[in-house]
Length: 343
Ligand SMILES: [Zn+2]
Ligand SMILES: [Zn+2]
Image 1 (cartoon, protein in one colour):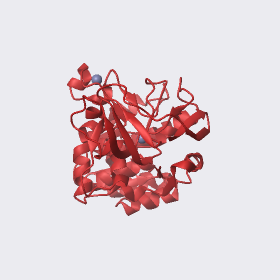
Image 2 (cartoon, helix red, strand yellow; image 1 turned 30 degrees about the vertical axis):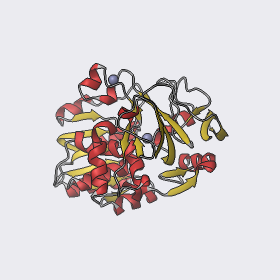
Image 3 (cartoon, protein in one colour; image 1 turned 120 degrees about the vertical axis):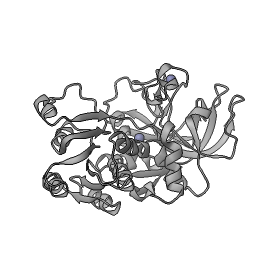
């Protein structure tokens, strides 16, 4: 089959590789119909992921049709349309049993290696899904594959930013960083009835955020706009979706007293100069969240099916899988906000 392989930093190649096979009784093989490139794919792309193995097939956001199942798979049969969850889990460890699958002892991310045990991803014609009953979700009729791809990762992430930020109707919510995850947070916060101010330096992203119902501004105008919307006290909830220390710092200064800063941008810097004086005087809550497709998949597919929102509105580029190298270059250069690859 053809697969998108990371050979080394900056070197993505579409290669002919062996078809995946069922290894364990709980496995399924899925034929991919749509797969997205995620900002998280850029970390190994730049060589920032320690221990990443050359040859790992990329991709943790995908939909497809079940082609084959192992004898222990109970919930899925060949021919069924499915979406993955970005991470696999064990269902048996203390975190899984407590309903916190993102903290599973045995978690692994599709399309990654090194940080987690190697698990080849779905930017390919076929993918092997371990523990298919836990990892896959059925796509309801009336939800397109392209919309369902978002449920694999970034829609639950944006939704988690909103729910764990405690957003309620009438809140003033600032979203700092309007890449794909930030746009998902904008969509979910608007759906929750908040007044949303979207902050990004890139015009295309501001335009997408505005089309989802936010007031969009550049970073320089963020404070003034938040103050105008909040009677000068600051945002009830600030969602940091940029994954940069400067964005986190800016977010902490946009929140009102006793406000919540809900972080879904990926952070790997070990040190951050947290201003304790500011945190204490303003009584701020700082919260980090990894998207949780396991717990939120059903609700989100329901919202899409009901027409409450459609995450596919943020797809800016649809590119054949064979041209993945160029797609990665464009995505990395921010010439493309959200790229969908089709085998
Ligand atoms: Zn992702
Ligand atoms: Zn577990």
